[in-house]
Length: 250
Image: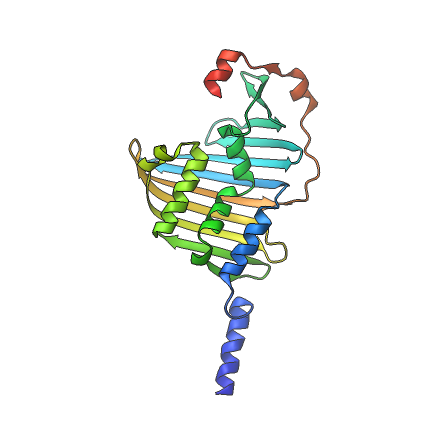
């Protein structure tokens, strides 16, 4: 009996780094750590498939939140990479090889979605909303929290993410019917800060029909980036965006 128990304990130590990883405890610590994110680097790939067509966007960014300075390189499939810069609430971007600047509100979709993507905010929403439903796996230097299913709680959290990322009002998101959520979130064992994440949602809406959305992120130097530099050429050569165009775009 003692020999059998020793074998079981040994297997647990090898497979999990100790039996019974407390997923709720890991999720709680990961949530608290995520709320401390102030700077870092991230690469986020967003892929959406609807009606047999797939669109993919890759965002690579470096950021500090206090002060708020963000550099973002965005690639859309075969299109040329676009460069964006935020200094405070001023957005700098390029059109027809000319740099423009435009003030945006704190709650503007372009600023909020950029910050959410770079800080893994959607993953944090899932951590907070589904803490007791997550499974935890212990790796060598990391923990991985995961979920796959279609519980009412999962659908509710997915609805919240769709609302946050689309800027929609509550009644506007009712058209989205979520059928499945898959989630994976890996954190450093010492800091509980994210190293990578994947969120996959399957849903239908009134206009596009069945849609599969996948967002995968990798994160480095979290809270280690002290300063983000914006090229002087960008700020000095930029022109104020014409009011009519600003109204149409923002």
